[in-house]
Image 1 (cartoon, helix red, strand yellow):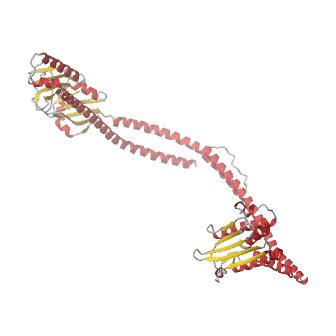
Image 2: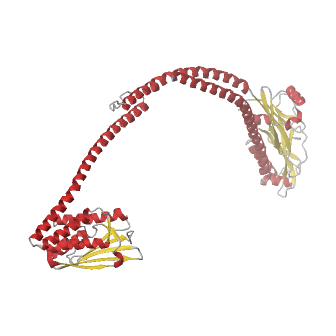
Image 3: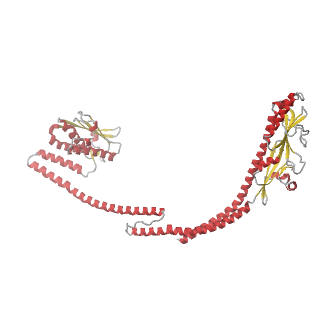
Length: 568
């Protein structure tokens, strides 16, 4: 068992080590691709932020252009140096300064009015020209974005964003010039990213912005040039470069960012460390697994196997008493319950065998009792004839006929004709007691005489009518038996009706009568047997109904299916 465990552990170790090596090779390439995709996503987001910054500048200029005071100055109808002219200029200067303060990367904002031939700037009220860069002449929907010339090498990168100033009729009346410092703008966007370089070039390959010195920029221009725009992602030995187009108002520039990529080296080191640690842990797990398996699995299993061998030899007292883990304790409890159940089943089988023998003895005894009873009744009948008492002989003859019917071996079903003959025998016996006090009427459909019905199913109904209906009334009673076939529903209707005292709703259950006596109890048992016979033989679709009212008699109706014997 231990050797099997070691074999399983070694097999699993080889499989897991192979999976780790394969996973490491696949993960290296997947990690490289994932890092490149992540860099491109970051680059996309930063390009969108730069574009939104210039869009916000453009919306600001449109808002300033639509201001009433700016429109009033652009018309050129205001008298120079008048109070209105000075007031409008002061407001325009305030408006430009206020809007410029909303953008930390804007160093100067100027407005040129062609009609008045002067400029308004946030850095100097009068500055002709406002910059040292030649500005283009723009039409109403055009925009311009160009680099501002550096005076010194230490100066940062700045661009001049120019937009036309139009009146409400979209006629150009001047222009706006905004000086944008790219250093604070890029620092705000890329400040948290560990980049090796960040560059922006125009369509001619001239650097508009770069985080590298001028000498490095010139070297990169010679090596890469504008062709880098066609390669969105470049992998170097230690870095990866992402290139994106930067579409701004009036121009299309090229944005490049470079990030360090040392994933493969770090991943290889991490993999070697992980693999060594895994091997050590695997050996420890193997040793611990062997000990745990031996203590918690092999030993309890051996003990339980020994108990089962004892149980197979007939020792049902070989109970599990070992204390182990929860799972083994539950298995032991199930094993103990199985032993108890087996012992109980064996006792039950022995008890049933004993009862079976007793039943066989009683059956033999019951086979003798009917013959003894028949012989005794026949002796009484012949004694009655010898003493010339024919009534006693007739009663005994009818009783013998009923006993033969109830204890006969012809089956559970007889014909309606045979059932009526048994009723005649029963009435002959009751006539010996009641005399002319009971009168019978019969209405038997000839088609129903051959139908099969359960043996002795009508006799309890007559007994119930005599005991509970006619005898308490102390008058001449009439019992009517009506048997017919309803061909449409294929039903056999057997109805027993008497003119006795009847009963109320509460007393319709014969078992609940309080008059007492063996006859009443026997009658109630007979009715219960009729209900049970109908349910067992025919199911729930057929039943026995009782209709009765006080002092108006009782009617009991049986609804049975139409069945014929094989002889018709």
